[in-house]
Length: 246
Image 1 (cartoon, rainbow, N blue to C red):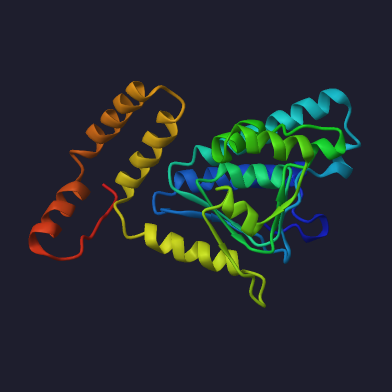
Image 2: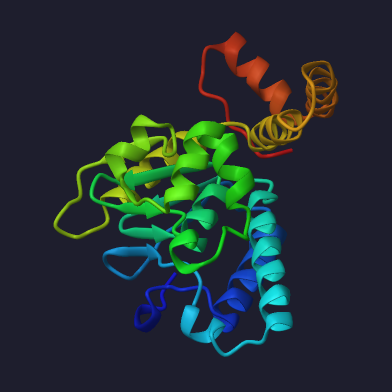
């Protein structure tokens, strides 16, 4: 993300660009992991473009917020693992974008918060739903009701991010840690990883018996793959597997 003059805030043009990027990622079978990062030092995404929002009438606001919600759903629905590298401020819609990712890595100095109530708003792009699923209902309510900002270490302690790292001189410590995490995922069987993500995401929305059925369906899809056969062969032959995603 690189909209320095507006701190990567989510304006109409920027949102359209993100939708286009997601479409390209979905159609590229070579993509195995997606890392969301900022090229703007000190900020991940400052949230909604409130200057642009102030020029909209009520109907336009409702339509645009629905589009933002759809954007976050599209990020969450990417079949491959997604990682948010939070090296600076992730506020409002910026944190909602990070919450739509599978994994989050933050610099200890990064600032995060769903600050909408401090602006007379409430989270409208998934924050009221994804934050409690991530940190629990009580903490989510506290963070949303107060509009509080927390740093990377606090976010780690409550389970909002998977990893926190001290910021470096280049200002990209979270991105570097996210790359390391992505490199751990890359050697694994791509189709199995996709099915694992699908089973978790779908299963978390239903009772455990239904979730077990979803897992079974995902597992069944993986059984005839060449990668499963390769994994078994590599185990027998005591060599690293060479997965091809089929």
